[in-house]
Amino acid sequence: MKRAIELLVIISLILGVSLLLTFASELLVPSKDIRLLALFYLFTAFNPRIEYYTVSSPEVVTAIVWDYRGLDTLFETSVFYLALIAGLALARKLYTETYSGEVVSGGLSTIVKTVTRITAPMIIVVGASIGLHGHLTPGGGFQGGATIAVAPMIFIVVYSTMFLLSKGVSSSRMLLLRSIGLLGIGFTGIAGFLIGLAVNKYAYVFQNLPKPGAEIGLPAYIGNVLISGTLWFFNFFEMLAVAAGFTIAFTVLLLARREG
Amino acid sequence: MNLEFVNSYLLIITLTSLLVNSIIAIYGIFYRPHYIKKVIALTILSDTMNTFAIYLGYRRWIDNVNPRPPVLTTPPTDEALDSFIRQAVDPLPQALVLTAVVIGLAVTLFLVFQGYILYTHYKTLDMREIKKLKG
Image (cartoon, rainbow over all chains, first blue to last red):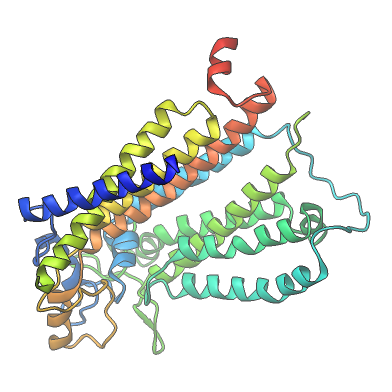
């Protein structure tokens, strides 16, 4: 009863203060106009008429994340990587990861196991779709990777961590996959620069499409398919790195023993 | 009571709830003794702040039409780009929030691992008792 009254008081407080603010101020509500910077992003993100200033990506958020503010996202990826490495270093003596070869039994009931076996490939496909269409639709590498990492999590809950290990999903393999993803991000970042070195022309680090004064760049289209230069590759490798990273974190956290 | 009024009332309800939410989260970080509850309060605070950043980039309804997400869904003709620019919300806060979400998740992961170490070391996660133990 007391809790219900407290909840009622809080809710009525919120509604009342909101009503007061509605009358009091027009300033707190977002206006009909947006900032000039946002207008610039919206105008240039996918605009074939300004060939040297566009990203050729209909998804403006991905264009900002991996092109306009690409270095920001690169360092964000390294922060994520370092946090995971620090966590693994803290937990390094707490878990042993050897699959002894015994038959894995237990887990939840047969119904749950069958449903998991059916839905897990679907989860992975949805995650891959979110990640690989990151330059066309809302989503991107990180969201796709996080969705894919749900599949091993469900397997750990429904079967067991040992089942995942017996299927070959060990943390060292995931670390390998994650390193491939990070190396891919690094090489995609300097791809324009490397091409520029090879053909002896100017090019920037982290360059996507051709820019004025630096004619080197990755193509926006391959055949008829829009890949928006480096954005597709960044999303793909980020997806690999994030999915593998979360899988490592889940397996290690659930393998850790108290006595160490 | 016209639609414009209801619209701004709903937006202000969102804003006030965000403020109350962040106050509760700060209370949880400082006054809850348990480590895991502190971590949960920290994630609530960071999510509230992310929602607040997205709110700042939002746009009011124009002629009773909802603003569009910043995704161009038609071929980039002049008319399509024009209506896109007049209707889409600000994409920059969303991109910054994406970065903030990833970093927040990484920090949460690190804190969870650290909580594990704390538990193996002190056999408790109550911060009052850990403070008493000193070492």
